[in-house]
Length: 180
Image (cartoon, one colour):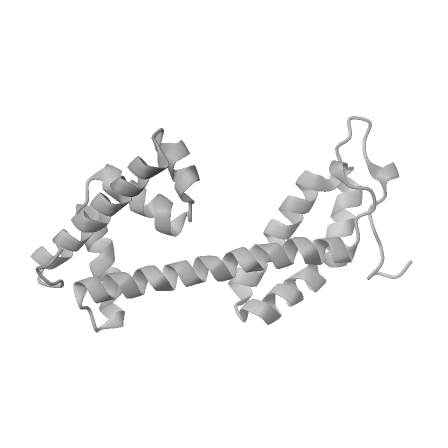
């Protein structure tokens, strides 16, 4: 069978249902560069492409016992989903940066990261953690509520309070406007 069509068969799984490490290692070697190139073409970022490729094989390893033949097309499907997640993460990150820049009226983008980092460090731990979970860890309202042990409405209220606290710190430093 060609490299493109090679797969890990059900026969390679160990008795307990988990995949055989040697077979998976060979599967990884055969397909890694295809997945890396696929991700790199879509992201134009080698570091992000390496992360997508690594995550693709991490997911593949965890799902090996659930599936029969594993082929390159299956890996492309996993990578495609992870790339979609990366695109959404980048959009949320840009939206957050725009929102903070707008709220703080910051025009110098080189200093934006330093200003935000300093302001975040001045927040209470709980507020900082909520902002990190929401914007950097990309938790949905339901997941955030689960982590915080509260309702979705309460979780979003906490996010709103944390954002206001961040805005207040930036305003106090002279980087925001007075209206809340």
